[in-house]
Image (cartoon, rainbow, N blue to C red; front, side):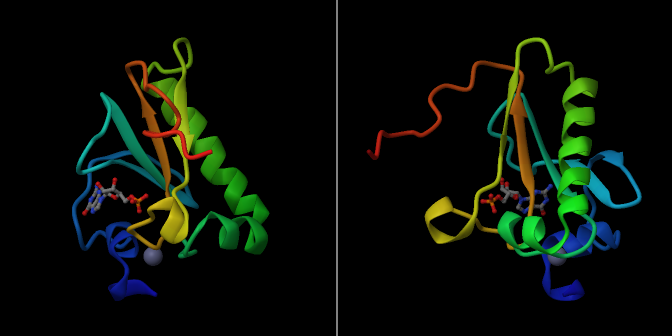
Length: 119
Ligand code: 5GP
Ligand code: ZN
């Protein structure tokens, strides 16, 4: 993937990001347009388009993304009051960047799971 993918370029250091945690396999950095007091994106360094592709293709790497998310939640002081971990996926999920990323959101009450009740 590489040069065509925004988050691969962040992994490569070609685009700056505010990195809060890095492991051999994952990177966590602050979202450029935060929607909550804490809004961190957690990605595998290896390119997978979305969470379904990642979970089916490399479950251990998916677990690494969760473990890094939990470590960042702890570092950011979110474990007590709670947080939300979210993977927007595909068109209906509103995904805009097609390198899988967990949105870690917290630091304030986050409101309803969806803006509107669609059921
Ligand atoms: P999605 O809609 O794909 O779930 O989320 C993409 C997220 O990436 C958005 O929340 C957006 O603010 C964030 N984003 C887009 N471009 C950049 C960037 O260049 N740097 C950072 N740190 N975040 C970005
Ligand atoms: Zn990528």
